Picture 1 (tube, rainbow, N blue to C red):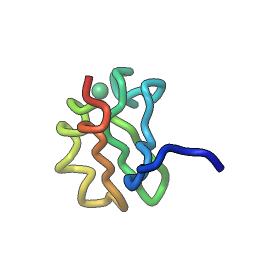
Picture 2: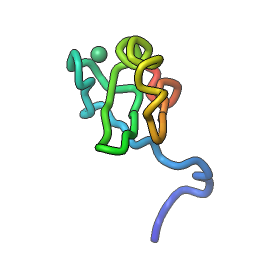
Picture 3: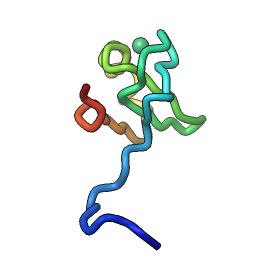
Picture 4: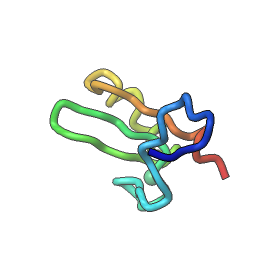
Length: 68
Ligand SMILES: [Zn+2]
């Protein structure tokens, strides 16, 4: 096992290869639902936040981790 000295935070689950389910932009937020995951760009995560947060099991906002 190799690694750097400090990595206390869990690694982001989203990468540049992950794309928003609605528009294809780089995904920033993963929404875990009982039926599966959805990933959205920051724009669409915000657009669907009110609707989805009621049923989301988890809401992983990685906007900060992926800032560019
Ligand atoms: Zn989008």
